[in-house]
Length: 532
Image (cartoon, rainbow, N blue to C red; front, side, top):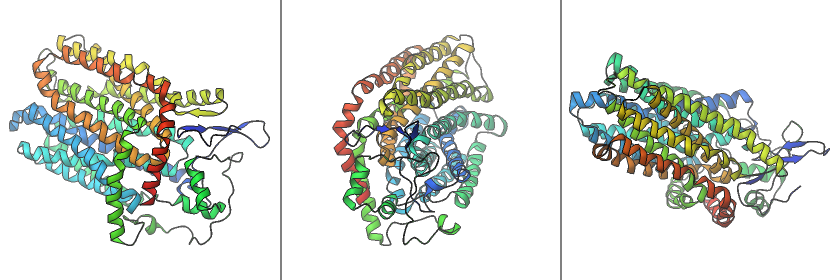
């Protein structure tokens, strides 16, 4: 077997020879324990329900961030809120997402996972109620700030919670479902809101959104278990590693073997009280320390040090890919909400809402391509590479999106302005949806493989980067579309998409070298996050 102790993070042994040497077995990462409270030991039905609740929360949170677009035309008509003012509120939404994600990022490691979901869903309820009661631009901006905070849990916390219950080789399909929920919610939000507005008026969008958040808050409080688990401490007791050996085990990513179809057998954990009761698993707060002063110190410490991961190459790459897709979303939604109500289209609220369908179809194909096909592709690459999987292997599959996404932007922008047959801009929306799912899924999977021990903090970095990117271009969207035609604007966006997506090529060539150069910084960062 190859010795991977000195390989950079992101290079893993996906397959290892069985004890008989006749076949290869999947290596279990992270290493499970014998504890009945270890989420990795949960039965499949329990993991499936936990993941299902997280995925629904993700889709709901994403939908909340885009539902207001369906009301922009009616708000302008009823309240005099112009598209430019509306775009300011959308930009503040990005501030709420990025700021909320960053400010809540220390909570999961200090007080458990559940509190972040409670805060996000409560923020969603407040934001939706304020939206339903909008009378002026100020209230609209405040409502979007809360709606942004509501989505912050979906930006980083969900992936962290999914990583608690799944082995690394199981996370590919889960990442596909996550991106499908996040992106699907983003596209379904305007569609559902448009259908609601066409039947019950635009204010009903807020009331129904608040009801959905309230329902999911109850479901979450009653069924979403706390998954905080001190794996390092249990491994110390399970396999009797010294502190120094354990650090070496974790930092150098020493690989463990699995038995034929079962997890490796370890010694029983000593001193554990047994399985936690239902009420213990459903506590809103599970603090790591009884001292409020220590918790406050840990909160400030993590806020101060977590931005260090924002400059890691894979974080920058993922943030750039996501940020570009979010920015493009703002532009084509702006065109839909203005251009398609006017001649030659003369669409109704319902017709504009249904424009999300081609994006959803494209998204579904993108997710299948980026999760199912990509999983087979990286397994094939690993088998050719003596069972060793390099993180950059999956980046080959992102390259076609440079052409497909740019083509979609051109077809939509030019077709919308010139009044081409409806199938042409709709096909463009399908291409845009495909690129969203493909680029998002692959870039996030890449980042999580490289920085598997700091998923939460790195996802916060991705969220901050992509929302800064999205916020900046959202402020520019209104004035830019006012000064130039959609053909001119979307031609520039097509070039931007082509160049950003092609950044995968230098990552394929030099990505491993960059991982090696930043490995020391990464392990120091992980140590700081775990020591506070």
